[in-house]
Length: 219
Image (tube, rainbow, N blue to C red):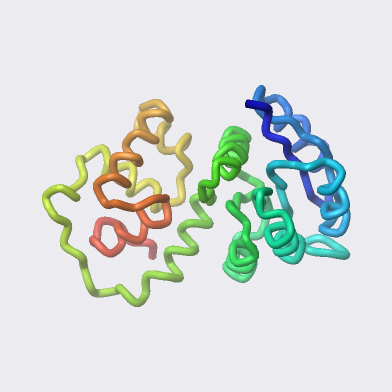
């Protein structure tokens, strides 16, 4: 299988170059082009045929939300990964509604950005922990005061519960691994076990279920 072809879109030239350099260091990823705004990105897509577009949210001429909507409508095979400094719901929600497959903040660890590119390319939803927490907080008021009882099969081990608690505090997999003195692969394994027990597909659903079960609070 060929390398993942990435188009980097950001209005800050230094950041475009920096992202291009470290993303290209991954053996399975190549940066095929860069763009300074949404209009330039759309023009580049026809020539570069990227698999993944890393898209800033707020840019001059055409913003990331508008460009993402056009890309997902006209090029359904291309995945969009939002990479931005804006972590408020009034930016997160429009980007996801426009069709972005993931939303990462620019202060994410480089390894998390690389992993995000790979995951959105596979069709998975990718969110920074802080973004996931903001979304869950906006969704959970309706369940406040109504605790869902877990079945025996759904109960978590102490290690799994600790990982979920740290996830709710906004930590990444790498940060959880350091806190727990385990490998990142072990953290991913615990999260996979939790998802299987609760029959959910991603970190957002894990957090929603944990709040509903009274295991964590996002206050």
